[in-house]
Amino acid sequence: MQSPRNPYIRTSSEPELTASVVSYVDILGYREMAMQAESEKREGEFLKRIHRAFTEGQKFLKGDFGPKIGIRDRYVIKAFTDNVVLGYPINLMKGFREGELELWEVFETLSFFQLRMSNGGFFIRGAISVGELYIDDVIVLGKGLTEAYQGESEIARDPRIILTASATAAVKKQLETYKEERDTPHHRYLYRDSDGQLFLNYLEGILIAEFEQGAFYSQLEAHRQMIEQRLSEFTMKPTIWSKYFWAANYHNFFCSQYPKYFDRSHLVDVDKFQLRPTTIF
Image (tube, rainbow, N blue to C red; front, side, top):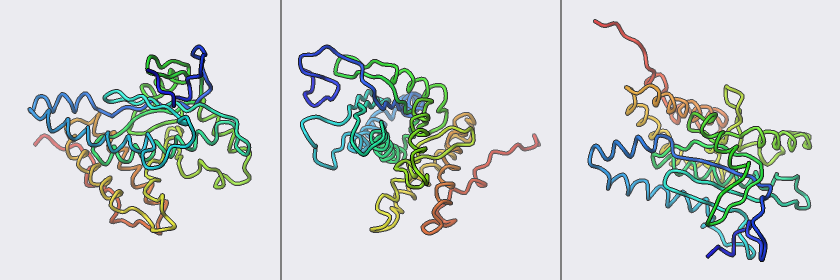
């Protein structure tokens, strides 16, 4: 039976594609981690660890920390093992630019999810698009999903959630209507990478209560320790190691933006983990 709370399902109506904010994310290196756990006879331990991380992470995706509003959910989540699809229909609401509210909420929701998963040892890669989508218990279909999937598989590369061309265009259009970029609801949730790609600044969640109590230092420290653990673990696998080195650089850049809260003690010591050649003797 289809959920009556699904915003894509309309009473007595055939399925219809709807303009949406769409995200497709998966766990970086999931298959390799699962296969390693199997080879080391640690399947039970791996199951408990990923189940715990996903259970906690999906609380943020499903909004379990607050009451439901109205008779329908604002967005739909479809999760299967190592990947998650989120579809958020775009509504034209007075006082908001088209898709702005939906993009902002997806940024916020995914940032909490990505932080929780990363700190549990499961770094996330994905993409966010703006396009048509239909999603229910039977099928997930639409250009928005296709673009988000291609963005994740072909562009994201590192443990980052990138914006595809459609999402980037939507953000740029919204930014044009503000006098100051810092006034926009997207400002703190987006960074621009060295390849020009916009990506989700998921560590922003550490400062969600900045003015009430400051930074959540324990979450930042957990993130630093997990990155250093992965850098040590994959020293002999440079293609994997480089992805966690990206995470280290991102962690340090985030800290550099808030000198009021963070100093050198909060940084990943990237020099310690640099891969360097040696002589053969």
